[in-house]
Length: 173
Image (cartoon, rainbow, N blue to C red; front, side, top):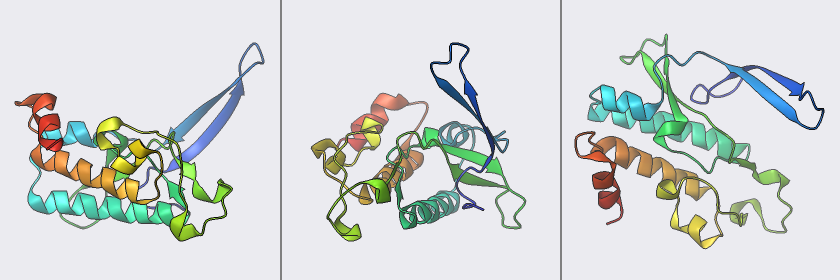
């Protein structure tokens, strides 16, 4: 069993292409009827309490990943799904992290460095959510925390009426 704030894969299938040259993967996950976090935040008014709970939940999922140790490298509102929850708290939904296409398993990287100083030297992810270290080409698990805080900032300040250009201008200050 995984973490409650990471989208669960229920089944996966591997298919060879008709030509036999490649492989396709199909993944079955739980149903995410509420969509991604970016769209959800545009539709509904999120209180300060809800934003803090979302970030707390996502920090717990990132901590879980880093304990494995997996580096996600592409945390952003579009990679957070909103899923209905049967929990008894005051929110009937929870955020769940998805899209591990840019993720890397830090334990597979051959390095003489200790776990505390393990670094990766690849630029990957969505530019606006990238920590400065990624742009410099040398980074560690802290880049996921940076991306999560930029996600929180967007959640707190983004206004559909003002548009993305306004938000991007605010974040570049």
